[in-house]
Length: 454
Ligand code: TYD
Ligand code: MG
Image 1 (cartoon, rainbow, N blue to C red):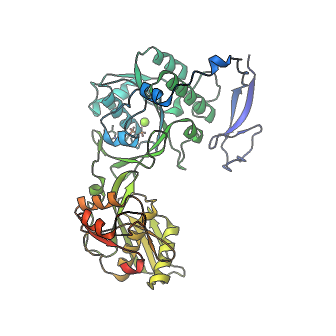
Image 2 (cartoon, rainbow, N blue to C red):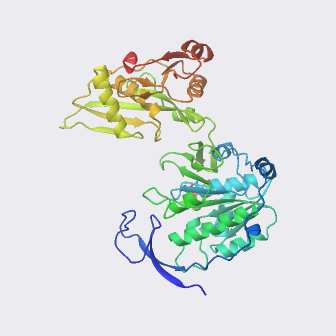
Image 3 (cartoon, rainbow, N blue to C red):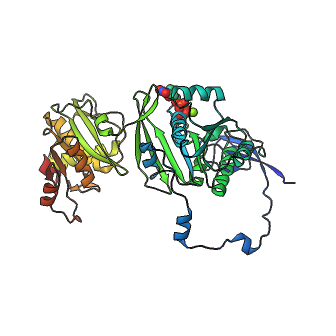
């Protein structure tokens, strides 16, 4: 019989320690060590090489044998997954409690159940509660196998008896427990062991597994940072409580592009897709006010226009305030420094506030130019030219650098009725300024230095 060992496992990073201590040596977090029992590993059985290594087949043979992706018809979800769910893959969907993970996934199984055999196992809600939710979402007619359970062994046994299972949702991985471990559900060892069981069954039987994971208030998937390495795809479902829209973002994807986003809106009867998010985020935009500029951004492969707002006020503080919401504070400081030393626009003795309207966060350096435009407009108290969009990275020499996806950005801006675009033409592009102008339905203003815009 395997020996039982007692170890202390950090619930944040998953490191095991032989002794308890107040602080984890690995990640430095306090009070996160929990005693867990693990079974000493038994030595692997000796296998014949022939049984261990299966015969290698050529790659295109393997590809053709693989079934096609499961497409749900919920475009915003399919695109984030790289064009549908790959059979045998394991997806982790993380997000704050109450953000709508269960709602999204119930709608997903309902949509897929028309063509595939799907199951939904909840460790958080009773069957009657699941039914209520299905009623509310008007998917109670869908043929989905529903269960409420937290025993991994029991669930996997039951799944093996379902023929042609295509998809199982496990809501949530923190409530699941394997019987062979003594630690409580939700501890790192339980989360890791339960996930491993589901992953093994997915790889063996070729169905898709979607694991739901809750995020702690620090913004990491509770405990299971370890899970991110084990699964094929990590999606985050995020949004602001005060807004209706929700964003599904791919953080890691073995079968598609990362940084891809899907936009949904939370309504009374569940989530609906937002096909044109730029229009949603620009709904309250006023053109003739100073201090606002439109950024033509790209998230993954999809263009997204956002409004950047800047406000300048006299400062009564020794070191004036610089506050950015939805944008990096250091980058704001850098752009102010470039404006001051390269363009002679001083922001001394002024408080500066920068905001990305709609509560979104921008990580793209391409937003530099739009931020600069908003700041210049606010500092000079003059609105930017009507119908303009901006994109480009700003260098310390005051130069505007080109960014990728220029054409996608121009097309989206033209589609939404903008008439002017300020950006840097890519050096490597075969297109000249002239062809950019002829190709797009928008007035093109190529820039090389930020000073040209001023
Ligand atoms: P839920 O999917 O339970 O969140 P999670 O699984 O991520 O914890 O979503 C719960 C929230 O969504 C709750 O605040 C109510 C809201 N909601 C709606 O607005 N409309 C709906 O149709 C449903 C089902 C939920
Ligand atoms: Mg839930």
